[in-house]
Image 1 (tube, rainbow, N blue to C red):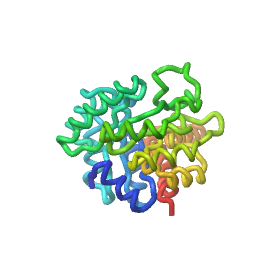
Image 2: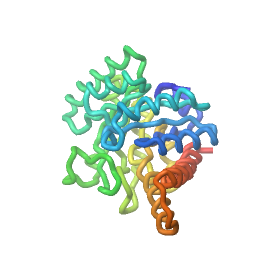
Image 3: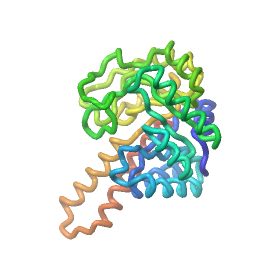
Image 4: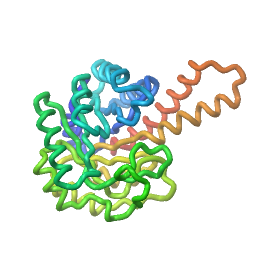
Length: 287
């Protein structure tokens, strides 16, 4: 069942849980995510990140994600992750996506607001949910999809974190449905233990009265997930560790199996990804 991000996250708010948003650049990943969600009877978000156009262009994978969502036995949002332009957002909406993220967080504050408002005004015509980002997410450089301001020169620090007071102004002026906030996570594989500023997160959630989105959501400890959910996170972006699980499973299979066929590798990867995202979904349910 295809639903908007607003609908999925409203239900998450009522139940005090988070919906997992899993980037699905391949057919195997998308199938793994849908089957896992159906087996656990939980809502889910199938995401396509612009950086994954090199794997499968949105024109190719987008209709597949939408079709999976429509046929699923659980609520599924099809979401554009880290959209960069109005043109790309329009393309996702035309393909049937029910949610889009516009990422102008690298811009000056007023420019960020201007771009986001343009996207919100356009998306409202089609009753499409909009997510935007305030504060800058960094990348570990291992498996991550985004870096702060597109450069590796910015280091992780509280100066990059989302300001709770500014967040209220941003949400009030843009009228977005969900805010991606920076409070200590990074994109990619963690190379050191993350510091999550839970008090800052609580203040952001209290001020904006909107669902908070956590990017860089894979690779944390179970208690970290529970803490952020109880502090207001309703959408958790998860990809790098699931993709790594699929790759490791394929590597192990190749090392022990002398007669290799490509289709076998896709099955091995799909099952490993399914196992990993199913574990994540179970934690996100906050039961």
